[in-house]
Length: 361
Image (cartoon, rainbow, N blue to C red; front, side, top):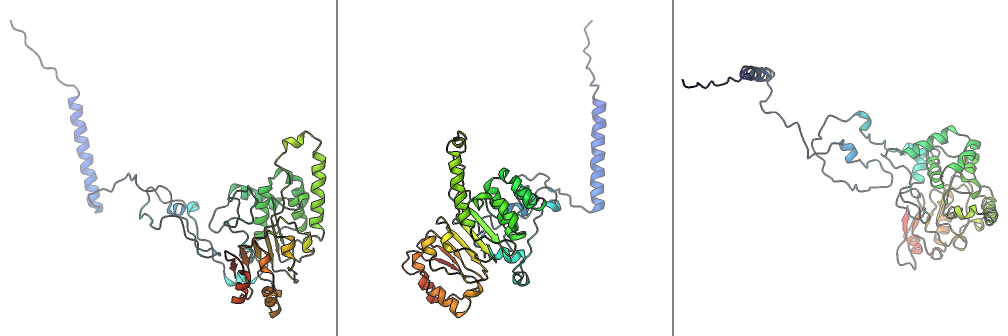
């Protein structure tokens, strides 16, 4: 008797048919709901891999609202129409900084006027302010930028600590950060005499820079003489110690930049160190005799005499024209904002030079 082959039945066939029926029903329900909502049949692509995922304001920051003129942006001029993902949170959106009005610049005690007056010396491209070996990234905060963690920490220290407490924690703050703190405070909250002395210490400056803003602080008549007397004593005390070898390279730096804003000049120019390359004298109340400045500071490359009332009259114009500009051989930038700059003055400043001086007026 021949054997009969029995074909085995697939037990999963009924369940597969059920899955197909459910899938068709879901599809019909989905299409019916879209027809009711009158949505187009074609669906947009949910995965976009060729577009940036960050907010446009972070990828293409705006440079509007700067006081120093038009600085071209290095980013692409074209912006993508779409950005993948949901809308960015409000905290990510960079708001445009408020524009400085003429009323803000009229008040010489306002932060807006101080920022405008110190814009030349605090500009990022100013290499005259930085001592050798200093990073160019250590600059003041520009408009539209978010403050760094270091600047936020320094701001908390500035607002919470008194002058005595600043002198206690000064050894624990690096010199370059003390310089950043001095610049930030000069614009937003000028340092008092006690706070300035606490930040500068016995050296008399912070990482080669000194910024004095009046009427909150003034320089003593013997400020530079006392600073020169303290440094040799410290060096002599460390010569005979083994620790002096470990601290090599951390010796006190020389003064490269001096900024006096709305404060009198109480010392003779002969006290200025010859290492100064940046000298800022803005809104000085009394006239200053600068005839012998090339003799005491021959390396000056940035000189700012802006907004000095004693340079506005006819006598001030004659003083600028008769000044021995040829003796300042390294002069590159001259600030004369608020002064009368004539063609005769420009010819006197650039007389005998290969490269013309950049006169800001």
